[in-house]
Amino acid sequence: MKGRPFGRVRRAGLTVGVVASLGLAGAAAQASIAVHPGAGRPARGAADRACAAADRSPAPRPGTGGTGGTAYVANDASGTVTPIIIATGQARHAIKVGANPAAIAIAPDGKTAYVVNSDISGAGTGTVTPVSTATGKTAPAIPVGNSPSAIAITPDGETAYVVNSNSGTVTPISTGTGQARHAIDVGGYPAAIAITPDGKTAYVVNTESSGTVTPISTATGQAGPAIRVGTYPDLIAITPDGKTAYVVNTDILGAGTVTPITIATGRAGPAIRVGRYPAAIAITPDGKTAYVANQNSGMGTVTPINTAANQAGPAIKVGTLPDAIAITPDGKTAYVADRGSGTVTPLSTATGKAGRAIKVGTYPQMIAITCDGKTAYVMNAASGTVTPITIATGKAGSAIKVGTDPDTIVIVPGSPG
Image (cartoon, rainbow, N blue to C red; front, top):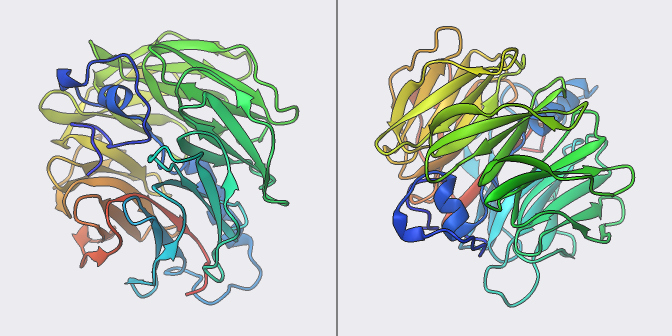
C-alpha cells in the first residue's frame, strides 16, 4: 500500500518539512510523507466534456450508448493500466506503461488516455505514456520532470499540462506532436492542477507550507504571480461556470479550510472553515454546492459549501476516513469513498442526508461515474479490485480484478467494447 496513514495514499517522493510521525490525517500526511496529493483524481470538467462529446457523436461506435465506454485503472505497483469494458463488466488484458503510473487524463475527443508515470525509483525523470483507447496500443513515452503527479488537458485537446512535484515545474505537452515543451517554473512541491472551462488558464497548487496557487496562461505559457492561499494546499476544483476556483488547505495543525479564488481578478477570498484534514472536493454540475470530505480524527464528515455565499453548511457524517467524492451527472447524489470503513456512502444533495453505506473492497480511494449516471465504479486500493455500484438500486456488484495497488480510475465514454 502507498503510505499516508489517513488520507489518500500517495508516494511520488515529495518530502515537505512536516513530521510524519504526528500521524495526522488528510493531506497533511500527503504533504509530509508523500507526495502526490490529488494526483490521480480526475477533473470533473474534463469528464463532462468527454461525455458531451460522446453525446454529440452522430453515429455511436461499438460499445457506446447507455452502458458503453471503458474504465481505465492505473496500477501503481504493476506499471500497467487495466481497461474494464462497461457493457460487460469484464477487465481486458493490462496495458504496460511506465513505472508507478499515478494519474490519467483523457483527451476531450476520447481517443487518447495520457498516463503519468511517476517513477519513484529515482532512476530518471518521469514520463507520460499516450494510450490509444481504440486499440489499447501505447505511443513512445514522453519525458517530463521529476516525480510527475498530476495532469490536465485543455478543453481544445491541444495541450496536456503535467505537474512535476519534485522539480517545482509544469511540463506542457503538445498532443499533436507528442513532444514536451520547456518546463514552466511554479512554486514548491506542486501537487494538483485544474484548467478553466474556457481553457485560458491553468491553476497549479503548490503544497509548500506557505501555500500558493500559480496561474499559467495557456496562450503564452507564462506563469503569473502566485496567489496566497492556506497552509499545505493540495487540491483544487473549478466551478462549471469558470468563475471560482476552490483550493483545499489541509493545515495539519488545525482545522482545514477552503480558499475561494475569483478567476476574473485572481484574488483569494476569505478562507472557509471545513473539517479537520480535508481530503477531497467535488462540485455539483449546477455549480451551487462544493462538497469537501474531512477525515477528522475519528468518524469522517462531508462539509457542503454554498458557492454563492461561500459559506459552509452543517457537516454530514459519513464513514471512516473519507477519501474521494464523485457526483452523479444529474447532481442528485454525491458518493463518498470511506477508505477506513471499506464502504461508499451516498449523500442526497437535496436533503443533505447520508444514505446507508454500501460495502465495497478494502481501502476504496476513488470513484468514477458513467456518463449516463447508471453505474459508479469504486477503486479499492488494497484489494486490487474495482467494485461497480448500480446507482438506481444502491447495490454493489461483483468485484472486478485489476492490477496491484491500483491508484486511479477514469471513464472514457464511447470506447470500443
